[in-house]
Image (cartoon, rainbow, N blue to C red; front, side, top):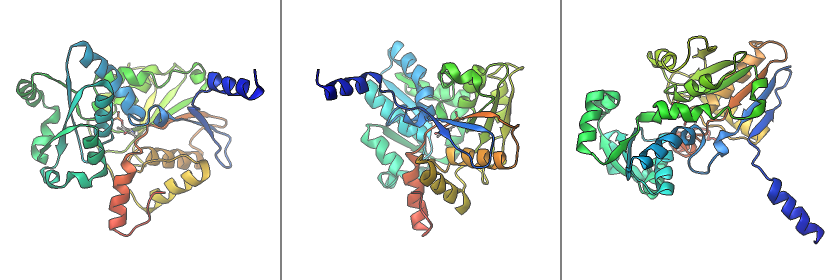
Length: 314
Ligand SMILES: *Cc1c(COP(=O)(O)O)cnc(C)c1O
């Protein structure tokens, strides 16, 4: 065999995408490792892949041909569901918050992407949208669409949580003292908590102000699990951010060649770096942070930033 052929074969046979990346933190004894779940799939990224996995299997198992779900105009869940539906041969319907979007939704990068993947939209007013978790509303919807498998907003049902337990699927995971993730609905965080070993603690960086969040998580995990929510880095609430966060995200990308989004992962990493610099972790602590994906959202944010003549995310 030619040497280069052997080398090529060796490369093919041993190649695995590098999912865990060491992040060198200046002036710290902490070990920080990032799990690149954003690289799980080019279109169904990060935790949305984990959350959809068992839902899609269930839908297929039960013979459904269509998935119906909910989301805002920039929703990673909407983009991921559209892509997953396309790949698995399931039709997708998105109930989108905001009637006004119906007129020009193709101007929105997330909805344009979802539409190109075959998703059909129903635009609903904010008042109606608030019912999305209401059992009576969902029951009526299921009656109206008897043939569809309904996935809740953000995808956070028990099957989603089961999928997120698989985020901690590496043998060496037991060596981490802390596992951190951004928290929206709390489904991903619940899965991570369920997969923790006794000695480990989970830290959830909340990005949305939701008084039910703690209760939701409690109801999904055992009472002796060790976890906490940190609300110090939400930058004012869901999808709110400032120049400082954008500057951090751009610095992080330049320094580590890893992109972060401003809604979820950027806030978590800003928080982790700030906590480390303030000595919030014991000497030599080993911290695993989950890159939950969400990078498709950057295009929409940059569109907003450029309209305001502000610095863009690189
Ligand atoms: C949806 C999302 C989250 C939040 O996940 P939940 O399970 O709703 O808490 C975190 N990060 C990214 C990138 C997301 O898209």
